[in-house]
Length: 496
Image 1 (cartoon, one colour):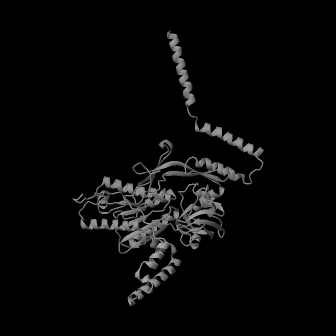
Image 2 (spheres, rainbow, N blue to C red):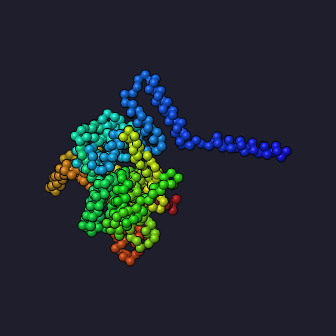
Image 3 (cartoon, rainbow, N blue to C red):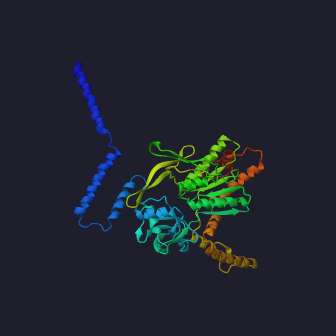
């Protein structure tokens, strides 16, 4: 009886052990080996039996490799020889191309490539390519199924060669076809304005490159030429770039050896911390407002989030610390993943997601983005039809046979002269004028200026008051009504 029970128990344990081995999932290496053998068999079979071999067999293989990498995540991709060569050249900030800043957050399934900005004086600028134009075809090749790296490689090439692009433009009925002659592009990544009446500096940055570091540092040094009460840093439509450029720029704001970001690999292994390595040059007793939107991604999110978190942590440690950073606009894109470019055989490379970024405070932005302190949605700028309708029918002076006094005639002549002058200036200073005109109608920017003025008023009205990020944020939210949901209580009359 005892022996029979023992045998029964041993058989049960053996059965459990066998089932456990059967249930255990095969390792990555086992699956990769088995299916790579199948891939080799398919390649051999095609070579032996297919009635017509492809003329460009390399294209078939690059598509196969890229399809595998795209199964992993949206940002891993295969870089064939031409794309790999072009991307290494573009990092230096000087290359043969058309002079556009493109949306690098797109996926290969997207049927277009969005132009985020146009380099002033570049080939695309001369052909009147505009921000938010959507390129759908490059030299006859549709964008659908093409990686961003491949699309970028097609736009670049030898100097004085041409590239033909087809594009959609918002509120334009037809597809536009534009032929652009490539040239050496010296990127201008930043632009700065001073508002003398408000005593505020505005600084925009469209991408993080090596050139951007020098440009931002020079502009921030020039900000000391005038007394100012706040800085607006515009990172809207900034889709990222080089991490080391973002770290260097953050070093202009934070004390030396401040934590910028941490990367964590699979199972939170292979962590690495990144710190600033220079002395700051920005006056940290003045408020910094950073404009963000859903196109603010990757390195731009790291800059905005890092400065915000340091501001929060410093105010919590020391309630007299006046380093105040506030985010204004809408939630950011949420790209918090790390890509490494690893060279492989055949002069190619793999762009592989290897880790996630974590902001100070162990905060991941991957798939979440960063929420602004003040949610303000961008109001739509008037289109050409509405502008024409307003100008032609929106005023008394536009009516047929309207009575015109000497003053109204003089005003009409001044407006005509102003329009002519604006067109002439636009031909000479296209990019800066475009930004300037855009800011004049930019409700997010105007709201930010108002917030800086409120802080300045609070400081002046009560110099003894303890001013830090938390106290100011509380007062601003009490005074300033943003687009975030707010409570409304209905007041009913006695009759109801």
